[in-house]
Amino acid sequence: MPANKNAMTRYKILDDLLSNRYHNYSLDDLTEEVNLRLSEMYPDTNGVVRRTIEKDIFYLEYEGPFMVDIERYTVDAYSKEKQKTYAKQCLRYTSPAFSIFKKQMSVDEEYLLSEALTLLGQFDGLPNLEGLENLRLGLGLRKPQRKIISLSKNPLEDSNILGELFTAISQKLTITLYYHTFKAKEARLSVNLYPYLLKEYNRRWFLIAAAESDGKLLTFSLDRIDDVKPLSSHKYAEYEGDINEIYEDIIGITYKEESPVYKILFWVSNMSADYVATKPLHESQRNIGSAHETELRSQFPQLIEGRFFLIECKENYELIRELTSFGKDLVVLSPSPITGMVEKRISDMNEIYSDLRK
Image (cartoon, rainbow, N blue to C red; front, side, top):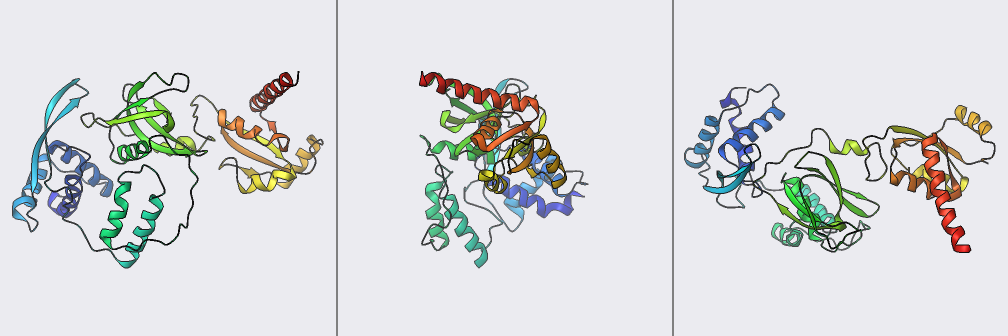
């Protein structure tokens, strides 16, 4: 697509980039980002050169109907290739709140935004949480009279951590993470990361990120994070693919890349069968069909009534804990590596209780 044919699209992209206060964009950065977004919208485009973006910015400032104020400023940036800091010339709108593409909201849009603000207000520590009410008042949105959705949560010692990580992920910022382990709470550790995902499991929040040093995926519980510092001078590296896909094969948060995906067959008593059927242990869970069920009942005559289920997932700590949490109402039948781990966990528990009774 010729450069002049997608000019308005480029102006819209530049408007978004120049109003972003979380990134420091040089002319080369703007060119790279515009080409990236154009390729997503128009796969057959050849992209544009730096000179085109220079002309676009000149048009926005001096020739078009917009006449926008753009400031030039300098920041210290870090070159990973050259391993040194340099002065980077950047551009942005002079006014943080300015945009050339603002529009009036419809009644439906106002309603949806009002409900979204109410829901967001229940998450302690989200960015600009204190400004949500000011935003509602500024837009003239009605405040709901009662809470419609109630969320369970464990309070964090520093609730701002969630918001800072949320911002770092949404704005694609490299960060330095300061944290401690449960075993050594006084020892403060640090690591540079590319943050990718905030994941909630069992009423706890976790950060999934890649180490800047080697790209290895790491998981941090938010209650062990002490501080987060953005590294605006370090270039962010995106995750190749969908980060959520690695969690499709597991229960919980612990991901073992080396573990195979097991087909786990288990029986559940009448007492818990409906609960397990309506609240699956894993998204792959399915009931065993009648033909196979007859075969299983012949193979395991000790299991009276109940139902048989199958899940497909990797082995991890959360899987074994979930399978043993039902006590005698859930029996794992195969495969042997999983039944062995379940048996060991039960044996260890029995040994502890036996020692207590002595």
